[in-house]
Length: 407
Image (tube, rainbow, N blue to C red; front, side, top):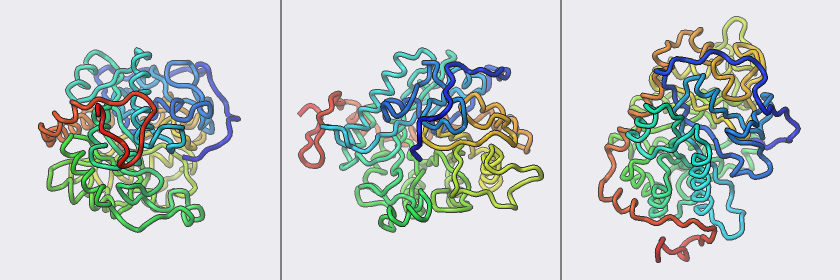
């Protein structure tokens, strides 16, 4: 995430004409959306879905970018709703406490916003989708709060059904990808050159036992390889929720690892972010290509579809994350400001050869992956985790001093 100024355009309501909605049978998914970023960043971030505040510019990256009506028009009705726990800087709250608090905030958002509903299993998601709801599957970006394997149980009990092992920096579970902020800053922040820690191995195994979808976005190559070595024999597909092609920098998913994730039945999400460290090479461009526009996002999507297969690739927008978006031009006349601009992106993908079946069926493919992960869960471990009482206050202690809930 790149923090920036608040001097950006904000729309109270979308001003331009909106495109025609897709048919109700279309079920598209987004693998990475921050619907509750205001809860995470407080006064720095403006708006949330449903309150009428919407980014009015591709540069408005501290403003809500998610609108329920626009999601419906684009056919995106199944979402991994990702909570981003900021560093544990709030008095009395540890990193685990922050993650639990953000999951509670996600619950509260769904309760006050009738357009959205939380689902904690693929069966529950299917029922809500039949009723026409926009369905959110709770996810946590970053396992910094996991200091013992029992913490995975607590996150499951709090609702998390997908967990990203690492975010920008190495944590107790694993090595993060280096140079995520470019070579200059990356040289100051790079940590160990490694993979999973012993705790990380145990945490991954526990996620498999609980039926939690493991997200390896932001992880180092070695970390991804070691997670694949654990998940593969267990028959568990993995997720890489948001990325661009690995043409520059280690933040992106390399083709060999993408192919292994796809071969396992896993999914790769294409992030809609603009980065100076992620350039599209000349051979991937077409006549009339406009760099810095959504043509970049189309090129990344097409690259993975060719290398891995289109069935493994879908949207992982990272909307309402604090990042730059595609500027106006190319296939998207208004740029990528918010979810209202998704139809232009989908139309561009069709124009470049992706079929409607692959685009429209992404939600069903995500449901099948969730079902595959759920089938590998251990009933006894699940039963134990479901009995946990999740703390609802801010008084969390780190390490050995923290007692299990109820003690």
